[in-house]
Image (cartoon, rainbow, N blue to C red; front, side):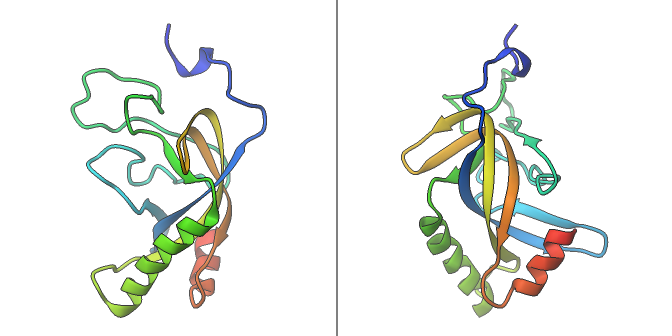
Length: 154
């Protein structure tokens, strides 16, 4: 039986990675959204809900997928993404942060984060795709500290 519960983990200690999200703070909740939502593959909107206080588990959201599988899978793009180093995440997210402040089509704020990854992890040239993730730290851009504090509390 192929499944999540009969696999040997890739490691005992979580792997540390970095990423960025769009975030929105509503009256009753705060949400993180992947910056690259793509074509329905990878983390779905809301997949990071709960990751600030515990582990969340990736699921393949490939629309019309003929076969269900445990994420991540080598021949799919599902799983939680994180970069190995913070610098490229900062460069990409800073551009989005500037676009938002200039009013160039980006309406949500951007926050950086340090995440811990566990379970099945597929290593790539610049980062990872993982089965499980949790947020270890939120890193605000200058000028967003107050809203990121609200986000962290929510």
